[in-house]
Image (cartoon, rainbow, N blue to C red):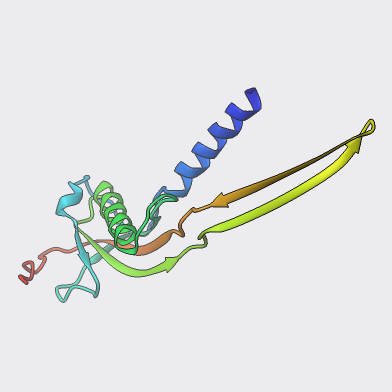
Length: 149
């Protein structure tokens, strides 16, 4: 029982670590801002920018659906950039991780003390693959107004 608790705790810690965002400072951070104020750029802003940090994050081990995965990584990039005082994230790329569904089947048998036995089992894994995103936390001095759709 003690082993099972330790294994469950280890799995929880590793799962949480897999969802974490990270950054590498390349510039000067500013006071934190609300992630809702952080704009996402898919190409460099025409007004220029100052790079603060390189960011990377993953969608999490239990995020299903491609759009949900993308929404998750964008939200995490914005949050990490906001912590560094960046008012923008320049998205530099995305990757798909490993994962997917698998099924394992096993069977066995034997003989102990004149008695025979047999057993079987089935294991199923439905863990989705993760989405990873990379970007630059940037400071844009005079951001262009948001485009209306």
